[in-house]
Length: 247
Length: 60
Image (cartoon, rainbow over the protein chains, first blue to last red):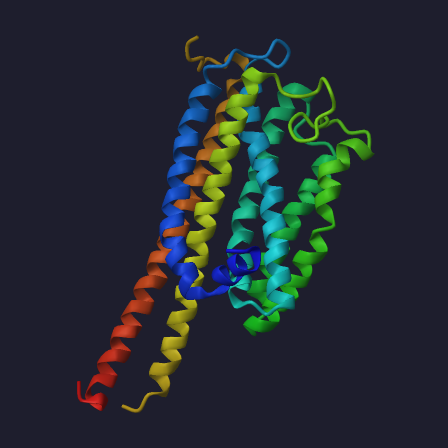
């Protein structure tokens, strides 16, 4: 099966429902196993010689932050497919992932703030990384608000998709903010980390497992939420049929 | 190696972070599953109603 056929396969609602019926529980189970193993390691690893016990915050903060960017990429991709190719399922996929992305981003900001206070001496600074992640949260909230604000669903979907595509510009800004500007936030220590700045192996394991747990949870919940929207659309179509049918 | 749950002076930062994360995941899981179940049941109920209304027409 080539990439084009995979794409066709997932844009068919019937096939998607059959695929997601078994994929969602499997992703959920993978996430739960990785989460339990990650949490065990989180409280087994020794404290950091500089940060003390707050180093454990890393294993929930970095996964929330990095997956929140990934979710926005999914939101942008699905919005593009919905807007340009008029794929109804892609539009539902975009709608389904926005609340999850907003929560992951809020978690990144809250856990970052709770980590920042003991390490930096402040809950918040308007540096480029923190500000651009706040902008990311505002894009998610704007998307959700726009979809809810317009009564015509097609117009709402189109307007929200355009907003989502504009917000894609923010992703490289979030990622490279620590390189482009002087920030209180540290530079990359996982993906694309400078030599010598990478995580020590002992911390890489709990980080990797927790990242897998956060990613798996997003995948499972995304599929469940898309399924909910497919059923909602079916229920609305059936309501119309019932209203039109002669009694 | 043994478990280290004693975060000392950092406990007031560490535990709220883990607690809020746990609550957020609990909410996301519950809300997603309940919404999906609600719409699945609604679609099934409407489908059954439509089938029942059409049955006399088709003579089934």
